[in-house]
Amino acid sequence: MVDTTKPTLSNVPADQTVECDNVPPPANVTASDLCDPDVQVELGEGLVILESNPPASATACTYEITRTWTATDDCGNTATATQKLTVHDSTSPTVVSCPADDTIQCPNAPQFGTPQFSDNCDTDLTITHNDVETPSPTCAQAKDVTRTWTAKDNCNNQVTCSQTIHIVDTTKPVLANVPADARPPKGMCRIWIDGVPAAQQPAATDCPTAIKNRPENAQVLFGNDFADSSKTKSGDKPKLPPNAKGFTDVKPLPQILPKRPPES
Image (cartoon, rainbow, N blue to C red; front, side):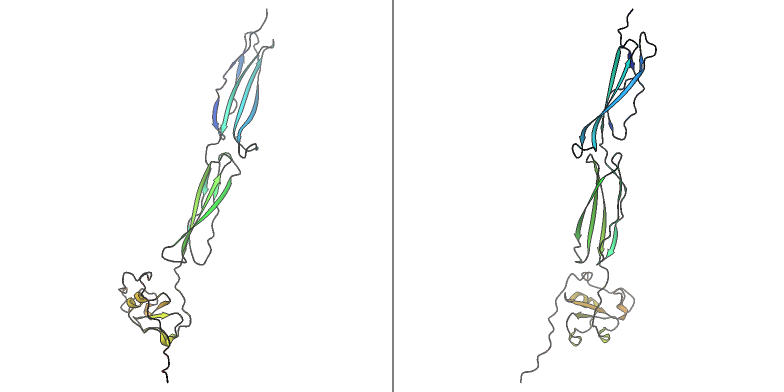
């Protein structure tokens, strides 16, 4: 009597393609034999890197696991079965937290926060950032600065998050060298031209006219009850021209120069 029949392997799993964080454990493969009631099954496992970033590095992006089960009976008859697992990372990193937008006053410099990212497989993400400035169309000192971070894993899957810092200028200018008696009366305004002596400054007038006619090299002085430029003597808001906000319609005044002495 001879035994030339190989054992039979059962529960051998099929080949699969899986994500790097979802590699299944080895299956419980069993063996049966016509003559040997106690055939042992041995498992061998090998790994081959199919794709890495950078190439030929130890940081595998796509790799293949080969699992081989071997059963040998008492007469040396051997049966083998294999399963190939193609392991790949096609999942982008995730944003754990991203700094919130903020608003600051000029001339302060923007201070950006630090985002947090995570990945299902790569524990050493590559994080870069890029800044983009968007000037304000109405204020030369104002702008938006947006920083965009990109987190990329070793399979080039990536995710981004952004923070925008709004730089604004809501602080009124401080006029220097303005005599105390140069303030206009209550309820009135006065144009104050840079570089012109106090005695040669335009006379006080109503606020809508002063605001409308303010030249580029001048400021508007408000009377005492116009300190916040929002109240009139009666407590009502002033009836300013539609273009008064932002001083967009500026009409230059004639240049004021000292009078020449009469020629003798």
